[in-house]
Amino acid sequence: MIIFPAIDIIDGKPVRLYKGDFSTAKQVAQDAVETAYRFKKAGAQWIHMVDLDGSVQKKRVNSKIFISVAAETGLKVELGGGIRTMDDISFYAENRISRIILGSAALKNPSLVKEAVREFGDLIAVGIDARDGYAAAEGWTESTDIYFTDLAKQMEQAGVETIIYTDISRDGTLSGPNIKQLAEINGAVSCNVTASGGITDIGDILALRKENLYGAICGKSIYDGTLELRDAIEVCK
Image (tube, rainbow, N blue to C red; front, top):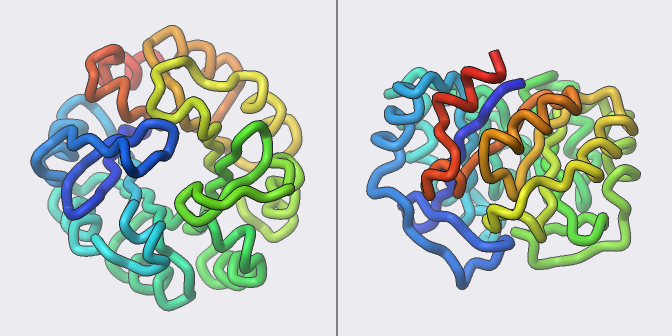
């Protein structure tokens, strides 16, 4: 299982949110590149990044930061937030981003997902974010009546190989991942499933690994010190 340390960006700075609420944004580091280097030193090979400004403004906002992290650290960057067009995808693909995450587009423009997969293959991932099992969009500000596993199956049929599943109610809470829903989505599709939201400590990492998940995204737990990134990476080798 791959451990993805997370860096979310607002106004050019690394932040964390509580349950996706932008009013709770708290800066957790001074510089994204410096933070990424620290994660690399702990053994990370991948990093998960989100353009939170982009997710709300529906366009690329902090792109220079993500490109700098990929270019300067050599880490594989998976990136989401504000990616709504083939031009956005091409831009990041040409600038060494290793995985491009479509979120709201998967709900609102499934034809874009199909076109992106045809063009870029496994470079494309889909982020499914849900409250009470139902998908949300637009930086988690809009709810839908689409059940999360139904959306996952649609994305699998579109050729998507990687899905990142976030239980919004757990995100940034250090309350533990939603193992039940993660097991449900992992059993519903053959895609690689990455867990996001609520991961607290090494016990959670071991529980997720037991579910044969592809990856786990860790943010607040690393910044708050409840999880040592090096230890998490080591137990997943």
